[in-house]
Image (cartoon, rainbow, N blue to C red; front, side, top):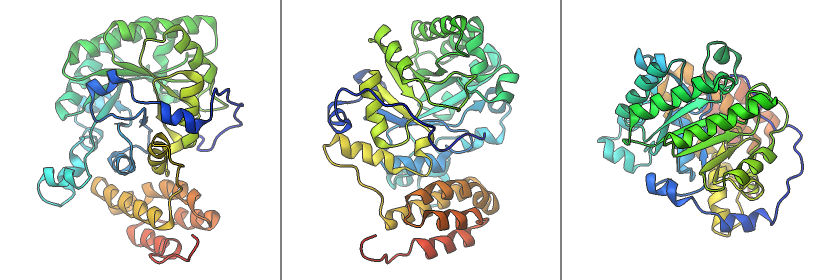
Amino acid sequence: MSVELNPSALPLRRLSRATAETAQRVRIDPRVSKLLPRFDAPFFQAGLAGYSDGAMRIIARRHGCPFCVTEALLDRTLINGGRGKIREDPNLIATECGMGDIDDNIAATVDDHPLAGQIMGTTPHEMAAAANILVGMGHDVVDVNLACPVKKISANYRGGHFLAHPKDAIAILRAVKDAVGERVPCTVKLRRAFDDTPEMARAFEEIFNAAYESGYAWTTVHCRTVAQKYLGAGRWEFLEELMARHPDRVVFGSGDIWNVHDIFAMMDQCGVSGVSVARGCIGNPWIFRQAREMMAGKPPTAPSISEQRAALLEHFELAMILYSERATGQRMRKFGIKFAAHHPSFAEVKADFVRCENAQQWQAVLEKHYPLQTPAGQ
């Protein structure tokens, strides 16, 4: 999926206090931590098509992320046992990382829990079957995607398409919840509407209400429409108005979270229970560490060159468990480009990552730009 990976021109935020002060005040909603005790902070890593595989998720967790969501998995891929199913086994990396017993591997911070398996599909009975598969695989949450704006997804009556068809969307929500029962929590990802017409605003509200009435633990609401895709600024005001109408519901906000201050700015302005971090965490797992630092009353710290090197090495090694060396080299290029933004020589580092195709070339970039002994002051 091709999406803009840099922020559009953003409006001024209307904050009641400095983000540092908000950070020290906020905590995870106890209704969330009751369901998932390790989900202990009010932010998480979103499911990102083409990015948020097990390797990215474990790197995020090692830097303070309390909860992650898989890429959206097609119901039929799960039912037919495709490679998407195999790679999204939440224990795959811990099983295959070569350090002995799985419990030992988990103790060595290759634990990919708690994890939401996100599903997307067309019919209620196939979505229900896919949800059952995710529970059987060991996912801690089943998340229904009614948000994806990609044309090929909506053309096949999946994802954000359903926001224009509330009865069909609600049928899917109910079928999934009936299939899962009380075994694990169910959640749903939404956008604020299919488009900006009053009819679609009413459709969103109908689906949003039905989710809670059907027993869904929370919703994650992105503040752009499906028609808007990823263009232009999101409307935080929509989230603010939504929470004013439904202050008793657990809602995670999404949209235009580019740095750690945005997490707490959205919580302050919009009143959401927490924040889903999406494009702002690509190549930036430190956003989660920084958020925890701010919650503890400390200033957020930027990653040192040595910390960047360690994360790049670990990410590549974990990806090698999931893919061939060539596929890993090609996949990791896009991560290297984003990681490069933290480096003092951003343009040069980015250009070198663009040319990477295998582990040897990846290592060469690290030796050139991320030496073990860094000059004083970096």
